[in-house]
Picture 1 (cartoon, helix red, strand yellow):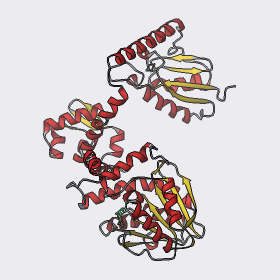
Picture 2 (cartoon, rainbow, N blue to C red):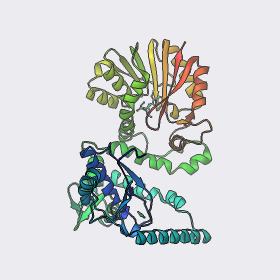
Picture 3 (cartoon, rainbow, N blue to C red):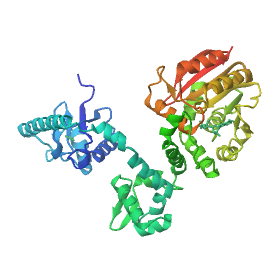
Picture 4 (cartoon, rainbow, N blue to C red):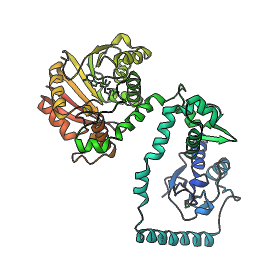
Length: 451
Ligand SMILES: C[S@@+](CC[C@H](N)C(=O)[O-])C[C@H]1O[C@@H](n2cnc3c(N)ncnc32)[C@H](O)[C@@H]1O
Ligand code: FES
């Protein structure tokens, strides 16, 4: 039984540069066009689109096959897609000029490809070559560093709608020869395009990386650039057991980028957290280390009777005030300057939130916060911890395990923690009904209730 009338497989197998492959011949653009066209024609109920690995016909790419009839297409272009979707997927008539129906030749090519591939792998193995997976991991910093430097210098804003290397170099106040080299690498990475002597942003870079564009992430990404400097101290931090001081932190610009970086993720997660916690019977919320205020803002927007209070350090609160005022909820989101490690939390809260907070602190500090939060909540009140939560043996998920090192290089005693740890700390502080609520994305929510 076929759940769909047609099932399309398109090859998107990435291969090393210079080796023929479907992506190198444009299969990703074809994939995007297929998805767009199928949606536009309302064919998603009739046909399923699936990406697949190498089919051994790489020299003829992009290759695509449509089942159950087994119709093969080769050298497909994005400009062919409308015809294929209309004639084949909708009307059931394959586009003959693109169909590849020389079965013996296809089979011979695929078999030969498989044999050559296995031979090459065996030769590499015999020669003791570093596996690609390790090589890519080792060199992974190169594209990352290239993009971070471009963001730091604000290359994308300087390139605008088109400028040559000299103009861009002057605009960003950097050496023309070196800027030229960086621009070439950015084109190679698909982040800029070049025509004649001029470089311009790709649509993606123009949208996300140019300062001041509608969906610009530049400020938030500059926090990642700041973290790169911290990550380069990892070896010494592992030796010494804690972060190594560097002289880049704590300027007003650093703080603005940090809070912008937090807000980038928090604004997407906040509605999920509000939904997960629910607002029935909730009047007063304390948002410890609220940062950009994204979670309090989401609560205030979702529930007109809720009053939120954000406790954060004095340097951050002017930035919090900007976000809260832009969201139009200043009347119901109060800001309080303080230190959550020392200050009294107050009392009478229905929910206390710790969003992306616990990873900054040690086990002892978190236990103490949980204990004081318990005292500040009303009966039946809830403590909600949202963070990257490790598996019990702490070897995954990968993001949470890596983020623990992020906290090693950035804080005195921070780390990511596991669900059993959070559960135990909550119970020790007096909470009951401790449970985990799954959220979309990399973070999880652990909630405990006051009896
Ligand atoms: C990782 S950010 C999380 C911000 C916000 N909760 C979110 O998820 O977007 C940590 C926040 O805690 C604040 N913070 C750090 N140490 C603090 C302390 N001792 N007392 C109060 N706030 C603190 C920082 O200023 C920052 O706003
Ligand atoms: S890479 Fe697509 S068939 Fe080999």
